[in-house]
Length: 355
Ligand code: DAH
Image (cartoon, rainbow, N blue to C red; front, top):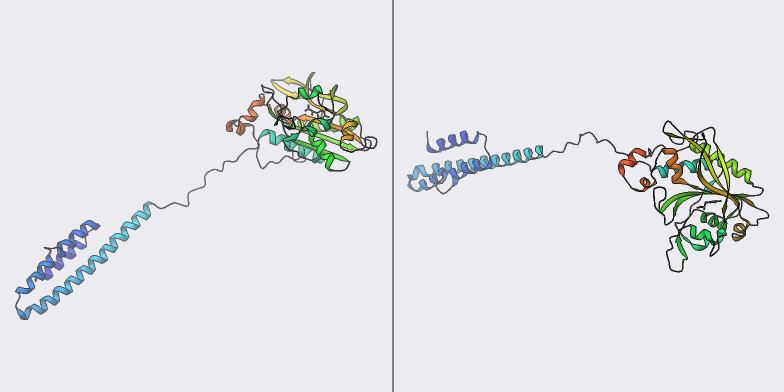
């Protein structure tokens, strides 16, 4: 067997083993390196007799090309195998099942506002909004609460400038003024929203929520007010019977004025609305004062009506058994998860408000 055939056979044996790149490089330099097998054969050419030299040189060149080609093919093969292996390892399995979808919850105050809006919408009230930053005129003066009126002090107002012209509204009543100034009677609106007073303990928060109601038309009287509130309380607490009591009170913007209490009792550790002989104050109301109507250019001899203001947070606490007002504003996700509502269950009267 000639030297070249031997080299070739040995090469094939080696090449057919499982090789990595560095092992293949060893084989390559073993053939073509400085003292490599093929290199040594080239060195031999000079010492070969002339008539054999040509054939030997030609065979050697053919062998050299053949081996080099095979090595190059093998290099590509090994590189491809390495890439494929890497791709296989790093493959992203897009068939992974989706993670459970974590839904957000509707805050009990938002839920309560939606419920209130739903109940009043059904009996013809429109929902209005006003800004949290109010002017002194809308918040007090136009509501028949002039400078030095004691009611101003009772409101613990957050003023926003030295002249006391801008403030955080202390109640939603200024929306009455905005609505009547910008429209023509009759008016039948509610206005839920944020209100602010400098007050903070277990039952008071510096920011809280109220809903204002206003119904102005020809021949509206206190009977309409009573009927409207009774309907609302029954619907809101989802009960057929309700005990209500109107207590004489005073608000500068209504005459006469009343505060409304609802009857309740504790039964088996649970608060029951509409039964028992305990009373709980939930809102202020009255017949809109003629001065307020004059301030918004409505003729009190032609139009009159009632207004009311309800504390939303307190209603939410009563209905959903929440006993600390401050929890509403803690942004504690666990609390919200427990007391919050499904975003897809929009409250409606016909489907049920809170289930
Ligand atoms: N604005 C009053 C308050 O915050 C609540 C109120 C009482 C509103 C009587 C009214 C009303 O519209 O007629 O204490």
